[in-house]
Image (tube, rainbow, N blue to C red; front, side):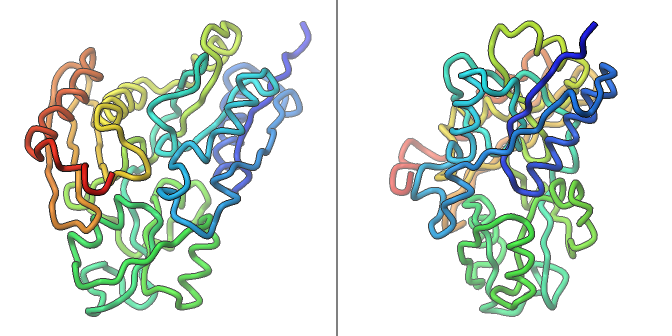
Length: 309
């Protein structure tokens, strides 16, 4: 029987390519495909091209997926590989997140130029981050620090740090590990103090709804606990209308048939934050996320997002 041909769509950064190659390796191992049977198609996205402005000003998370999703919808590619935390909660009609690879460490890593920990930075130091969540959390922990927007891929941000443009920066530990750069982290942040973005550390695979052939191929790649955790986290995010314009954190942990969830919403200046916790059966993962969102909204009050959303 002829080996099926697959085409994976991905962004062109080193991290995106590492994730696409990991997906290809797993497909090869699961189904005995030859490497040449699975093509990796590199695509440029608006999020990669726009580097001079914060994403919150030009459209948010969808800027990293639009062109890839158009190719997926049109059948030019068979599946798309993304960082889960980059995925909007509302996907284009006909597409879904059909599989999640096993999650890596979801924590944020601080990389200091002259000190190892965020709390060791001198008063008035400068920290770079493009994430509104990280910016808000930095200001919450160290209100005396100057936070500047810090766009670019992993290598660009590390170069800017080395050049002395900032005194420190934050990157996802999972991405650094996938690039073989885990050693650059000088402090791993406690997720109870510095909670990660929903989906952080997980690779998501997007495909067409009803594509039985692709669903069958992806089935062995889907990691049960990661998928359940992401259902909860993305439900929390969706109820809060989360985007790159909203500092929202959330992390679900699956243990057997139980799930525990912790979430947080913050104002961009970090001065006001509301935390929430929930737990229950894994069968209720989506409901746990929605319930946590409802309760944290009740804590914060109906005006919480109005002034800055």
